[in-house]
Length: 169
Image (cartoon, rainbow, N blue to C red):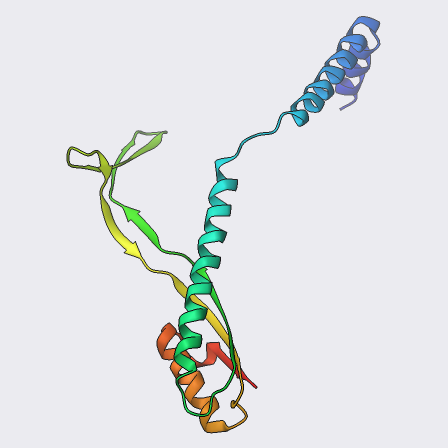
């Protein structure tokens, strides 16, 4: 340990080496500063925006349809509905995977399968949106029978458990 510390002191005792180390440090700081001025365009940002817009649009559509359905129940007055979803519709594409393994190395290649002459990706599964919960405020829900009907119709319409539906008045 002392040998190493003595060797480091010996290297940095030279003024030329010390100047080179300081200049390298300044150069790295300058690169970091310059890189902060250039804005990176990240495709994930636009995908996240599209995803949140799709979710909001789907939530509004479900809320409107569920409100119209609940208004048809006897004893229900003014209705306000809020629906939350986990994800929007998603498509899974067919993929070919090739894997190779040697003694010390493992590699895997994945490519999307293209269908027909149009060269579009081959769709395998379409995953539908998943509703997380619903909150409903409506006039007439003070009656336990009406509250139960509203909760049951929302749970059935959204295909969720009744414990994920809250009805208030």
